[in-house]
Length: 137
Ligand code: NI
Image 1 (cartoon, rainbow, N blue to C red):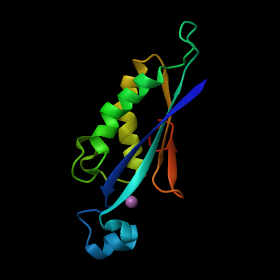
Image 2 (cartoon, rainbow, N blue to C red):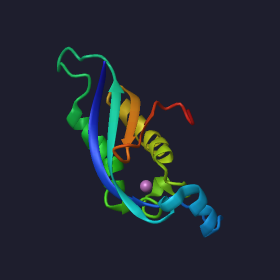
Image 3 (cartoon, rainbow, N blue to C red):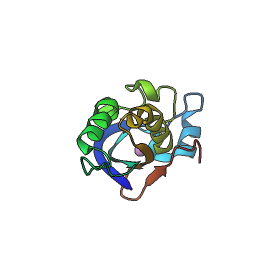
């Protein structure tokens, strides 16, 4: 069974490669090469079986605590280009953010006795991505 917890965070970022000129950055990233913000929604989906004692696949309070401590507190009201240790030296696209979140949180979710199944990151109402942990796919 799959169960999903949603968390939210607000962050600033820009899509920019230092080694490219301003013009080249604008050509590739458009106005996203300027600092701007998003109200992100993060959906963490885990897979497991129903525990007979609790009736839960996972205790959502514990899942939420793990996501908040390891991810939300580090990203919320931060500049993703400069303020986040696990995003250093990355182009902070949704793709790279989600891979970094997966790598950071997956071992902690396993400790809850479930598998991390999917991370979905909604950047705008029109743009969102889903990642199933299979690097680069
Ligand atoms: Ni953006």
